[in-house]
Length: 303
Image 1 (cartoon, rainbow, N blue to C red):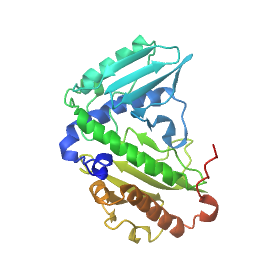
Image 2 (image 1 turned 45 degrees about the horizontal axis):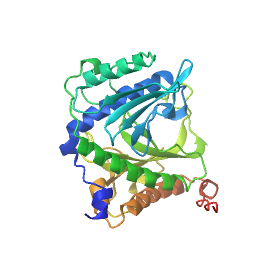
Image 3 (image 1 turned 90 degrees about the vertical axis):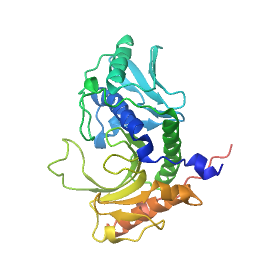
Image 4 (image 1 turned 180 degrees about the vertical axis):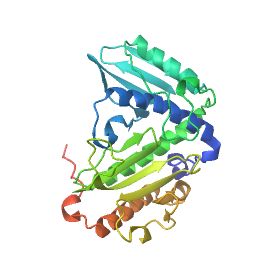
């Protein structure tokens, strides 16, 4: 098998849309636990999930005198909940409704002595149904989920490498369960006047964002995106790499289709080229202080 096909498997949205939608909603349930219990951080960083070698994790979540963690193990296809006092619960990830998953998950938290009240209405999805009423979304194709995990792993490697070339403020590489995308943000260090829609105490910064999403009902194919806030004059007329990436007027973002990336000789480098070219145009046109914000990777410490 060609190495690109293994490391960057095909994942047509129409073939796994039912599983994708179900998994998205399950992750929203877990994400809302973080939203309810974790101390707030700027830019909503406290609610994001993070990639692991086997899937996605909530990371440590505080509750009263303990800490617990929720992991989507997309290799063994289990949801694992472990607490700092040694207790552990597991839920099988298989074809089941969002409603059944919700009640099974909440019961597992109760067994561990964790009580939390969630807003059961999903966010950032079309035609939302409350988690405790949703029997419509009930699909789980393990083979497609494994492909999704493999793609996220490759994206994470590229995004982390890109992040390491920046010495200014940047976000972690993290996964937002609302928009269902893996993303990274760089900041110029200049503050903007807050908009009326800005959350209280949330700083509004000049920024550049890069990400990957697996597709959705509104954009039914996987791809990479990049955008700047605010977009400097002339930004969206910039010529970017690799050939085939382009600005999407409907979404207001630069897009690079995943199927194009996986067809290239070096998908990893293609992602880096897309990231660097879209960032460089934003930084140059926006007059970022690139000399102070960018850096070369540190040399490995001799063993």
